Length: 174
Image (cartoon, rainbow, N blue to C red):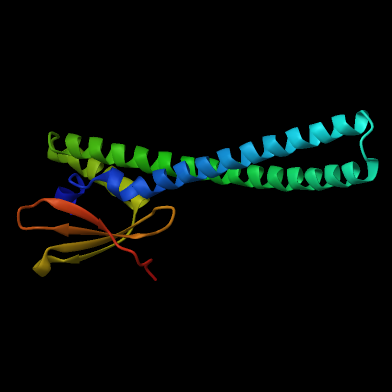
Protein backbone atom coordinates (compact mmCIF):
# COMPACT_ATOMS: atom_id res chain seq x y z
CA UNK A 1 0.00 0.00 0.00
CA UNK A 2 2.76 2.44 0.96
CA UNK A 3 4.56 1.87 -2.32
CA UNK A 4 1.46 3.00 -4.22
CA UNK A 5 0.44 5.91 -1.99
CA UNK A 6 3.30 8.04 -3.32
CA UNK A 7 2.11 7.43 -6.89
CA UNK A 8 -1.39 8.75 -6.30
CA UNK A 9 -2.33 12.01 -7.91
CA UNK A 10 -3.66 13.97 -4.94
CA UNK A 11 -5.00 16.67 -7.23
CA UNK A 12 -7.14 14.09 -9.01
CA UNK A 13 -8.41 12.66 -5.75
CA UNK A 14 -9.10 15.92 -3.96
CA UNK A 15 -9.61 18.09 -7.01
CA UNK A 16 -13.36 17.82 -6.47
CA UNK A 17 -12.97 19.82 -3.27
CA UNK A 18 -11.12 22.53 -5.14
CA UNK A 19 -13.69 22.55 -7.95
CA UNK A 20 -16.47 22.76 -5.39
CA UNK A 21 -14.88 25.78 -3.71
CA UNK A 22 -14.44 27.42 -7.10
CA UNK A 23 -18.12 26.81 -7.89
CA UNK A 24 -19.14 28.18 -4.50
CA UNK A 25 -16.99 31.27 -5.13
CA UNK A 26 -18.73 31.76 -8.49
CA UNK A 27 -22.16 31.44 -6.87
CA UNK A 28 -21.10 33.90 -4.16
CA UNK A 29 -19.95 36.39 -6.81
CA UNK A 30 -23.33 36.08 -8.54
CA UNK A 31 -25.18 36.73 -5.27
CA UNK A 32 -23.00 39.76 -4.57
CA UNK A 33 -23.74 41.16 -8.05
CA UNK A 34 -27.48 40.62 -7.51
CA UNK A 35 -27.25 42.24 -4.11
CA UNK A 36 -25.47 45.29 -5.56
CA UNK A 37 -28.12 45.50 -8.29
CA UNK A 38 -30.98 45.35 -5.76
CA UNK A 39 -29.34 48.04 -3.64
CA UNK A 40 -28.86 50.28 -6.67
CA UNK A 41 -32.53 49.84 -7.67
CA UNK A 42 -33.65 50.64 -4.14
CA UNK A 43 -31.52 53.78 -4.07
CA UNK A 44 -32.96 54.94 -7.41
CA UNK A 45 -36.48 54.44 -6.05
CA UNK A 46 -35.63 56.40 -2.92
CA UNK A 47 -34.32 59.19 -5.16
CA UNK A 48 -37.54 59.04 -7.24
CA UNK A 49 -39.55 59.27 -4.04
CA UNK A 50 -37.56 62.31 -2.98
CA UNK A 51 -38.37 64.17 -6.21
CA UNK A 52 -42.06 63.40 -5.92
CA UNK A 53 -42.84 60.16 -7.74
CA UNK A 54 -45.95 58.03 -7.18
CA UNK A 55 -45.60 57.42 -3.44
CA UNK A 56 -47.62 54.21 -2.92
CA UNK A 57 -46.14 52.21 -5.79
CA UNK A 58 -42.58 53.40 -5.04
CA UNK A 59 -42.89 52.52 -1.35
CA UNK A 60 -44.27 49.06 -2.23
CA UNK A 61 -41.41 48.44 -4.63
CA UNK A 62 -38.85 49.64 -2.06
CA UNK A 63 -40.29 47.14 0.45
CA UNK A 64 -40.03 44.34 -2.13
CA UNK A 65 -36.43 45.23 -2.84
CA UNK A 66 -35.61 45.41 0.87
CA UNK A 67 -37.04 41.90 1.30
CA UNK A 68 -35.00 40.67 -1.64
CA UNK A 69 -31.92 42.38 -0.26
CA UNK A 70 -32.42 40.67 3.10
CA UNK A 71 -32.89 37.28 1.43
CA UNK A 72 -29.76 37.76 -0.69
CA UNK A 73 -27.79 38.93 2.33
CA UNK A 74 -28.80 35.81 4.27
CA UNK A 75 -27.87 33.59 1.30
CA UNK A 76 -24.54 35.36 0.94
CA UNK A 77 -23.74 34.94 4.62
CA UNK A 78 -24.57 31.21 4.57
CA UNK A 79 -22.58 30.72 1.37
CA UNK A 80 -19.56 32.57 2.77
CA UNK A 81 -19.58 30.28 5.81
CA UNK A 82 -19.92 27.18 3.62
CA UNK A 83 -17.08 28.41 1.39
CA UNK A 84 -14.87 29.05 4.43
CA UNK A 85 -15.46 25.50 5.69
CA UNK A 86 -14.77 23.96 2.27
CA UNK A 87 -11.55 25.96 1.85
CA UNK A 88 -10.37 24.84 5.28
CA UNK A 89 -11.14 21.19 4.47
CA UNK A 90 -9.28 21.42 1.18
CA UNK A 91 -6.30 23.12 2.83
CA UNK A 92 -6.14 20.34 5.42
CA UNK A 93 -6.30 17.68 2.71
CA UNK A 94 -3.50 19.33 0.75
CA UNK A 95 -1.38 19.75 3.90
CA UNK A 96 -1.90 16.10 4.88
CA UNK A 97 -0.97 14.89 1.40
CA UNK A 98 2.17 17.06 1.44
CA UNK A 99 3.07 15.68 4.86
CA UNK A 100 2.60 12.13 3.56
CA UNK A 101 4.84 12.83 0.60
CA UNK A 102 7.54 14.27 2.87
CA UNK A 103 7.30 11.34 5.28
CA UNK A 104 7.59 8.83 2.43
CA UNK A 105 10.73 10.56 1.17
CA UNK A 106 12.25 10.57 4.67
CA UNK A 107 11.26 6.95 5.26
CA UNK A 108 13.48 5.77 2.41
CA UNK A 109 16.64 7.19 4.01
CA UNK A 110 16.34 6.62 7.76
CA UNK A 111 17.72 3.93 10.07
CA UNK A 112 15.30 1.21 11.17
CA UNK A 113 14.94 2.68 14.68
CA UNK A 114 13.69 5.97 13.29
CA UNK A 115 11.58 4.27 10.60
CA UNK A 116 9.14 2.96 13.20
CA UNK A 117 8.33 6.48 14.37
CA UNK A 118 8.02 7.74 10.80
CA UNK A 119 5.68 4.86 9.92
CA UNK A 120 3.46 5.79 12.89
CA UNK A 121 3.34 9.40 11.72
CA UNK A 122 2.62 8.23 8.20
CA UNK A 123 -0.19 6.00 9.48
CA UNK A 124 -1.79 8.97 11.26
CA UNK A 125 -1.55 11.14 8.15
CA UNK A 126 -3.05 8.41 5.96
CA UNK A 127 -5.91 7.99 8.42
CA UNK A 128 -6.68 11.70 8.11
CA UNK A 129 -7.14 11.28 4.35
CA UNK A 130 -8.45 7.74 3.94
CA UNK A 131 -11.72 6.50 5.39
CA UNK A 132 -11.59 2.93 4.05
CA UNK A 133 -9.51 0.71 1.78
CA UNK A 134 -10.26 -2.60 0.08
CA UNK A 135 -7.50 -4.53 -1.66
CA UNK A 136 -7.86 -7.31 -4.26
CA UNK A 137 -4.33 -8.54 -4.91
CA UNK A 138 -5.35 -11.10 -7.53
CA UNK A 139 -6.83 -8.44 -9.83
CA UNK A 140 -4.44 -5.62 -8.88
CA UNK A 141 -7.17 -3.35 -7.62
CA UNK A 142 -7.39 -1.11 -4.58
CA UNK A 143 -10.60 0.75 -3.75
CA UNK A 144 -10.11 3.70 -1.46
CA UNK A 145 -12.82 5.82 0.13
CA UNK A 146 -11.20 9.13 0.94
CA UNK A 147 -12.27 11.63 3.57
CA UNK A 148 -13.37 14.13 0.95
CA UNK A 149 -16.12 16.66 1.30
CA UNK A 150 -18.55 14.65 -0.79
CA UNK A 151 -17.23 11.16 0.16
CA UNK A 152 -17.03 10.09 -3.47
CA UNK A 153 -15.54 6.68 -3.97
CA UNK A 154 -12.13 6.81 -5.60
CA UNK A 155 -10.89 3.67 -7.27
CA UNK A 156 -7.17 3.19 -7.58
CA UNK A 157 -6.24 0.48 -10.06
CA UNK A 158 -2.70 -0.78 -9.66
CA UNK A 159 -1.39 -2.41 -12.82
CA UNK A 160 1.42 -4.94 -13.04
CA UNK A 161 3.72 -2.16 -14.15
CA UNK A 162 3.40 -0.77 -10.60
CA UNK A 163 1.85 2.45 -11.87
CA UNK A 164 -1.25 3.74 -10.14
CA UNK A 165 -4.08 5.52 -11.87
CA UNK A 166 -7.07 7.18 -10.24
CA UNK A 167 -10.57 6.72 -11.60
CA UNK A 168 -13.48 8.57 -10.03
CA UNK A 169 -16.62 6.49 -9.68
CA UNK A 170 -20.11 7.98 -9.79
CA UNK A 171 -21.75 6.12 -6.94
CA UNK A 172 -21.45 7.23 -3.35
CA UNK A 173 -20.47 4.39 -1.00
CA UNK A 174 -23.01 3.15 1.49
